[in-house]
Amino acid sequence: MKGLLASLLLLGALAGQTPPAVSPPQESVKPEDRCSVEGTVLNLQSGEPLKKAHVSLAPADTQKFNVASLGAIADAAGHFLIQDVNPGKYRFYADRNGSVTTEYQSKGRGKPGTQLTLSKGQKLKDVVFKMAPHGVVSGKVVDEDGEPLAGARIQVMRTMYRNGKKSLTGAASASSDDRGEFRAYGLAPGKYYVSVSYDRGGNALQQVEIRKEGPEDGYAVTFFPNGSSSAQASLVEVTAGGEASGIDFRLTPVHTARISGKITNPGRGAIVFLMSRDSGFAGNPMKNAITDDKGAFLFRNIASGSYTISAQPMMVQGGERQFAQALIEVGDSNVDGVQLTFGAAPEIAGVVAAGKGVDLKNRSLMATLSPEDAAMTMATPNGEVQDDGTFKLKLLLPDRYRLSVYPLPPEYYIKSIRYGDTESPDAVVDLSKGASGGELTVTIAADGARIDGNVQDANEQAATGVSVVLAPDQRDYHTLYKMANTDQNGHFTIKGIKPGKYKLFAWDEVQWGQ
Image (cartoon, rainbow, N blue to C red; front, side, top):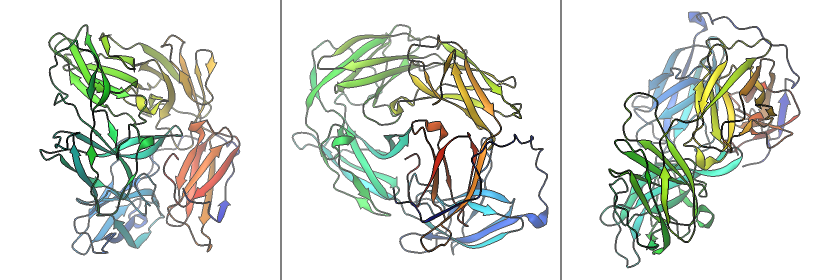
């Protein structure tokens, strides 16, 4: 994260505004008011033109899902031209085989780029889009005797932020071959954590036989160069088009435990997922297995820690998909006799209440509960908001969740959230004791405040592609944070702000959510 920029000019205010009237459908744009974007796509390293690069403009201010983008294909000279573009704000992307999909003027993966603001009839020319070639991580996995391990699973991970907390997310994966060698490709320039896991039993997706012997030695998940977690790992730097080689692992057996159990009503078979709650690796199953014909499952080589077991039927024949989940603590001993039963998830009823000036009809809104714990992102209940504001959510696992409703119009914001008689000013709903606390009530307001401003650099020039962050006084109220990035003129707009006290920051380089 780099320092605060020299100048920040505010042209708006944080006071509440009069609720705007509902906008009528936008009229078709006159031909003379349509815009175009023209430029060249280059290789970031060599400066050579990138033929066949695909560039696309996606509306930045949209309230719809799956909005179509406008695009073009670069010719042999790297030249592209996108025509017949409506005036407005756009996110600008490029992708190409062998290169990292990139947002215009982004300073790296997970960092925002420069928006394009097109005024009526504007013909934007001489845009230069630089794309970084893919990077590679390669190495070898051997056992304690130096013999190659085939079929080891390698994960390349980068840091990200969820609810203000640092976690890991997958960037690439690979498997070792018969020589124990692996090659993970498709990586953007940056620093990564690399881990390896290996099951002596071979393919994890297999029919299993429950064995009754005591704890055994096995290969636990290992982070490069020889750590049991990311806190003990070394970062691996990948350059544009470069190969970080020599990322080698020598796995040594350690004391591990097994988790065994059965699904009491497996039907025609089920798949079971095991996920660590301690690793910080967001939403990624560590291991998975398929039950046998009696519903039995087994996980070996499990280090001590907290885990979640999730299961789902292999086949669903009509009706509602069922689920089963449990929390498991693993210590020095095996955890045997785990029992899971498929059943319908308990349901939570809710309502989105419309404040003054709010129109919820035909909005195609969704209500969702995102686990506060990043390691639980597989369990994300969501439900469609009906025209009368009602919605229903399935509680997959008792936990603490962050409630949101999206996509709201830019000037709307969530004014309050209540679960039964309990107010949730930070949007966190405590469902750790299940779904028996009453109805969820989400109140939407239309009088969101707005800030318009410009960011300048130390030379008083427009600072493009920088991140502007609005931070509330209550720093742990994560839903009140707002983030925007400046356009090609150094201008930014932040809408839908809940009235209150905030501080406004600008960084020339910051990771999203940091």
